[in-house]
Length: 431
Ligand code: EPZ
Image (cartoon, rainbow, N blue to C red):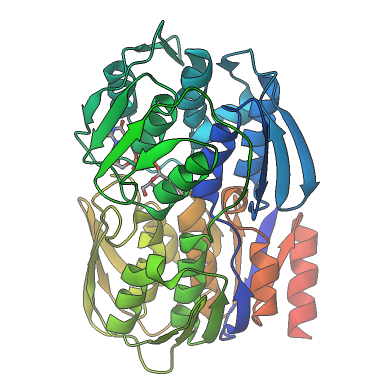
């Protein structure tokens, strides 16, 4: 079984390049099949969720030409099938973007209920409400979501909860509908703006993305384009917190600092120095970390996808901190793993109460989901002694070359596929 083996204690120091944003690339890949012309996309992250979605669009007839690790050509002119199923697709959450894309293109879509990280209940009622608001029928039937429409007609849709996925899915379904669609209480994440920019570059007419009211004037068809995905704000934030947690000094390159404001603000609050330039952010952690409180919120609030990294940092801060998770009810599963490392954390309801300790101790750990897995790696990098982390397939869903980038920052980490290899690595590091 693949695992990371880590010897803690080295501060992360150096420069790291951030890859394209997974959560922007996924809806954009789905959107790419909506036009019959060829689309070129680059700055795709080389992570398993992207590969799974590319395979899924091939299964309904899209022609995907992989140009290099980070760029593809997609031609959706032969997309006729509307059924998305299979083991690989059930594992990724973003399969649901194919509902909006296929409904918009073919007026019919059937997708196996999405999987993804197990971070709590993940309803899709707002997606279905949105499709219905455009005149479609949309139901869950025998484990599949089925949506269809004779005509898609623009509508006024008010989201009951701010949902990234529902906002994107409604944009996809509405982009070629008749008339104008208005989404109110829309999510404002940078990846929503990126999807809208991509579709607009294909001839769509979407205004207001990045605010809570998005207006989509339906167009008759979309054309080809060339598009570069934005940098991954969560990957960037993970390395920024890596500097904080390991007492390091990291320049995180190829980022949009504006997208990182809530992360930067928290790092400053806990005692790090953060310097921003055009497309880089430097984080220096030279003083003891200070306590604070944090609550996850939709963008521009502090992201739920940074909650575990924040908790790991506060686990080493002086005093008592409270981290409150307001989006997903099951996102503290990693706390049990941190407790194995000596952390002093109690979870009560949707809050973690953290009494900082001076150092984590190495332990054998298991990654419960993507972001928690990455956070445990950061804890292990700061810990005294060796740690192993298994279930790293979660981490590889969303972090390109995670252990390689960390090695380039001076981390003692390797990816091994047997206990024997882990022992060999430990022996090499010690001698
Ligand atoms: C996206 O998930 C991301 N996934 C998640 O990242 C991220 O944590 C989340 O947005 C929040 O930023 C992808 O982009 C593939 P939501 P999504 O719909 O779209 C409730 C990662 O690590 N809700 O914004 O599924 C829901 O329960 C992943 O990369 C409904 O009630 O999240 C939650 O409380 C993990 N009904 C809140 O809204 C719905 O129909 C926000 O969920 C939809 C959502």
